[in-house]
Structures are given as C-alpha cells and as structure tokens.
Image 1 (cartoon, one colour):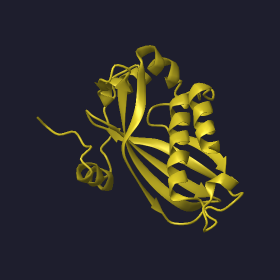
Image 2 (cartoon, rainbow, N blue to C red):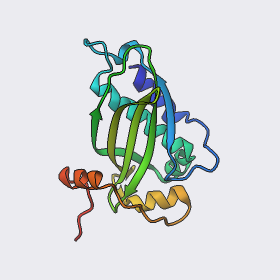
Image 3 (tube, rainbow, N blue to C red):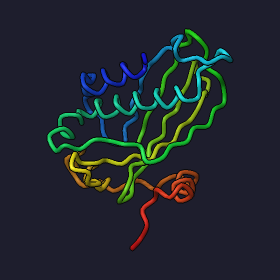
Image 4 (cartoon, rainbow, N blue to C red):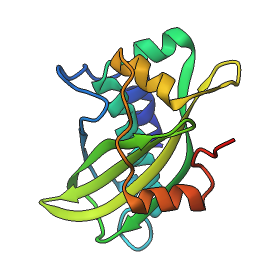
Length: 177
C-alpha cells in the first residue's frame, strides 16, 4: 500500500520540472526499501519492482513538466508490456536509485529502460512499452505525445536490438499496414 500511495503522490502532486530536461534525458528517482516491499525471502518482491517502475515513470513525466500538458488533453499513460531482469537483491532499508530513460518510440508505443542501482552495483533492468490513451478511450500515437512533451517533432533514436526483438516478440511493436 505504501508504494501505491507514493505513486498517487508522484502523479497528483508531481515533483518540480528539471530545467533543461528533454524527452531523451534520464530521470533519476532515489528510494529506500520499506518493510512492505520485502517478501518471505527477505528481499524485494518481484512485483514491487513494477511498482517502483511506476513511480520512476511518474517522476520522468514530472521532470518534463508533462502532467499539465497531458491533463489538458485528457491523455494518460498505460503499460502495454514490461519485462524485468534481476541481477542482485535489494533488502530491507537499502537505498537505491532507479534511472528511467526513453530508448525510442514507434507509431504505437514509447519504449523505456528503467535501471536499478545500489552503490554502483547493477541490481535490475526493466523494459517498458508504454502507450497513451485519451479519456474517451482513443489510443494516442506515441509521436503525438513526444511532440506535445518537446514542443517539436523529434525523430526516434534506433531501438537497441534486444528491445526491438522483445517488442516484436510480445507484439507491441508497430505493424506496417
């Protein structure tokens, strides 16, 4: 429940925008493992990583001053697909950072990488395919969202090959007509 409240706070009372932040700039969120985050094996439960990632993406949008822009149009983000690879455990009380960055986008989704680190050690890496919806249920093309957040039409960088392969495998990648 703690992480749900933290996500609500990050979404409805976002942190201040970061001057000079761009769509391709990394966004860093610092966190600490709470008692409710751990499982019976005394490390962070795999499902909690997804909650951490939600908070990181909320902070990413806040860093761009994106909430006002999105809310004015009635657009909101949803996860189309995600995957996480774990390398090390996080345990009670440990501080860590999560760095969220956009890897690229196609007509349908924005692809993000979310990396967890503690003291320079790589903990986990999440990949997320995110979509934007309008309050009336319409899907908003990813380039339209990028244009809104940047104020300009920006070309997507090439996706890393592992992300492109994953996007195709989980069927979130744009399909040519």
